[in-house]
Each structure stands twice: as C-alpha cells, then as structure tokens.
Length: 353
Image 1: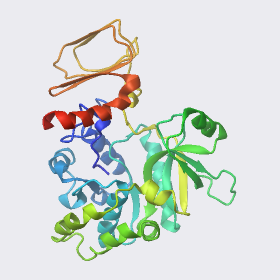
Image 2 (image 1 turned 60 degrees about the horizontal axis):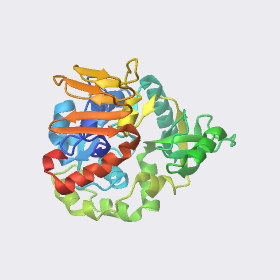
Image 3 (image 1 turned 90 degrees about the horizontal axis):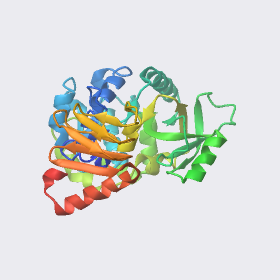
Image 4 (image 1 turned 90 degrees about the vertical axis):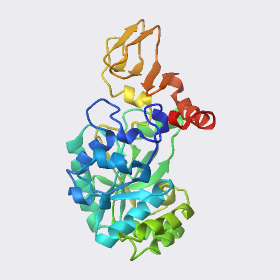
C-alpha cells in the first residue's frame, strides 16, 4: 500500500512526493525501495503488487524499474485501506484464486529483516491451511500512546504457540491504560501488516463489508483488461471510506496475531525518525553535511547537503528544509504539523504542499 501523502513529514513529504518515495533516514534507499527489496525475499518479484495513486506513476517507474505497469494498481481517489485491499483482491483473483497474500504499508522501517521473513513465512504457512486473518503484531518495548494495541488469548493451549487468537483491538490508549497493557503481557502493537488467503479475505468482505464487495464484484471479467480503468474510475468514489482494521479485523471472529520483534517502526512522525538516527554527543540527530550546532541538544535537523546551517540555543526542536520551505517546530508539538499543512492548503500556493 503506497498511496498515502504523509503530511506529518512535511515539508519533505508533499503531495507530489510523499514520504514512501523519500530516503528519510539517509540510507541510500527510499522507504518503498526498502519495502520492495524486503518483500522480494518472500515472494517472486512478479507477484508483488503496489496500490497507489496515478500521481505517482513516474515515481514508481523511477524507483522500482523492475515493476511492470501491470503490477501497479491505481486508485483514482483515496478511500482508506479497505477499498484498496478489496480492489487488489479482485485483480489477484483474476490471476490466481488460490493466492496467499501479505499486505504491507510501503513506508515502514524494519531493521531485523531476517526475522521479518521468518515470521511472514510462518504466517503464510498458517493461512494457507486455515480460514484465518492474521495481523503482524509488534512486541512492545514501552507504553507508547501513539500505536493501536491488540490483545491476544494467552491461555488457550489448543492454539499454535506463535499464532494467537485475537481478543480485542484498542486504538491509541492513554498512558495509564498503555502501562496496564504492557504489564499484563497480553498485548502487542498493531503494525498494520496482514497475512491471509485470498479466499479468507474475500469471505470476510462478503460478511463484514458486503457493500464494498458488491461494488468490486461487478467488475469480474473486467480486471486486468483495457476496460478496468474506466470501470474503477466510475465506481471507486462510491466506496465507503473505511480502514480494514475497523471494517473487518475488529469484527471478524477468525482474527489471529503473531507478536514479533522485527525492529519495527511505522516512521509516523519526525520524532520517530529521530529515535532511529545516530546522535552526536549532545543527542542531536543531523542529516546534512554543513550543519553547525552551538549550545543545542536533542534536535533533529534535516537540511540539503549544500546548505550551511548554524543553530544556536535550540533544544528539542525539528528543523527541516526542503525546496523553498523551512520548518522550525518543537518536537513535543509535532502533532501540529498536520494542521499546519491544512492551513497552508487554504492560504498558500500549491507548490508549498
């Protein structure tokens, strides 16, 4: 899934080039390139499909030259994760009705790739033989209030020792509740990655989101033909805007979770990027060749390599320059960036967002 705009990473992430197409960590690979190369260890490259917006057609071709146009699924409008997964299901069904599927966002960081591959292959073996919807959970390291939580059944001896039955889903709890979740030992973070057979997920759509399923079902015989584009453009905006979590996973009775330690982050904010970058002796994380810091600590600085930047007296700030935009924002108030982008859309030139 690679259709998001990533407004929390403004000004680097803008509508024309969102965060999945950016090398945010300075590794030499963009996030979508990292995701693609990771998934090639699990699936033949011709079986990797990308759901995105037609705006990013050239970026996909530039960054993933191995991908054919037939492997890119274009959404005419954004309708959250349930419609994009339903669309991909029907395209895949036209090629292989017995497919086993991994759904992964294009903009996540996974540091322990060998463990990721092992866990996904284990999950695929499970879903190939059972009617189950598996989500990849993340073993929590702290009571984080920025993630959703999944409670699993730790007492059912009949279950697989790794694949656990889901008891509850909880969206971003407050700190006290998050602490209780961690201490119980029955919760993991919700990564937003899923594993299931095509038959299981299509059955779930019929049961939980029948209206969306019926919309895409009308296209049987059209998928992967020249008529597909006009059909999708006609029907897509009629789909309900709903996530796969809320629409299916929280309601289905056959949901399971594997809790894993794969060095994961959803890189949702500049603050999360800060934790994954090397720090200097004053805990500053700097991406830029000509940055000079005086009496400054705990900042994240991301500026062009040819730009000389001198900072004095800053503590716990985000400083980002991209194109003609400079952002200076307190790290603790980075949640305001999304609102800033909204304000800019109402009052400034399109080039700024």
